[in-house]
Amino acid sequence: MSVPFLSIACDTCSFSGSSLVTFGRFLWKYEGKTFDFNRQMGLCRCCQKIVSMEHFPEAEVMGRAREISATYTGDPLFRYLEKDEAKYLASQDGFDVLEKVLALGRPPVCLDCGSTDIEPLKVPEGVGFKTDVPVDLGIGHPGCDGRLMVEGSGGMRIALRPKTKVYDIYGQLLMTVTE
Image (cartoon, rainbow, N blue to C red; front, side, top):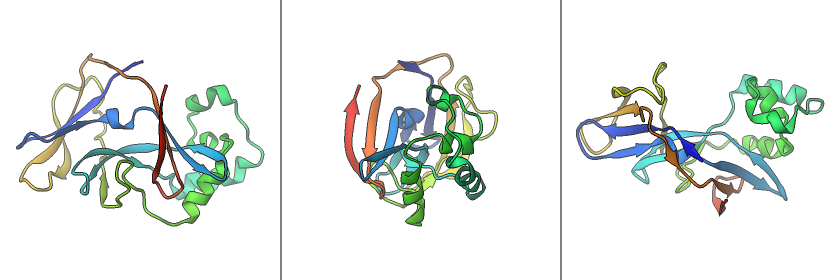
């Protein structure tokens, strides 16, 4: 499968990373059930690199998902196309796994090392995969005086073998399966 990507680089030193860290399936597993969770790019101060980190739903979205989870099933084949995040969450079989993770009250973790010393990377509005001019992410690069910049891959795509990463409810990696 080939995918477009975003590149992140420091404008002062050779530090770099990409959105490819978020590619694949990420599952929480608890008591034999799994939940396909959302993730986002982050800057991990422990790993000192661009990583994938957990992304928890907003309270309002989660509240609506709880209200409809008992009755809303959606179509499992189209679950990834669902535009309403609450419906998307509620349609998953392992919804109670998400509830268990959120009940822990813990912050999101780096999905490489498990650290909570991580800063989410928010890509500015209008920056897409075809953007070929670096845009400031508004974050300084720790350890140097540089700024982190993001740009799209232009028309370039990278072929990757899909991976599924399975984590416990505390965000610790249990296994990786390459498809």
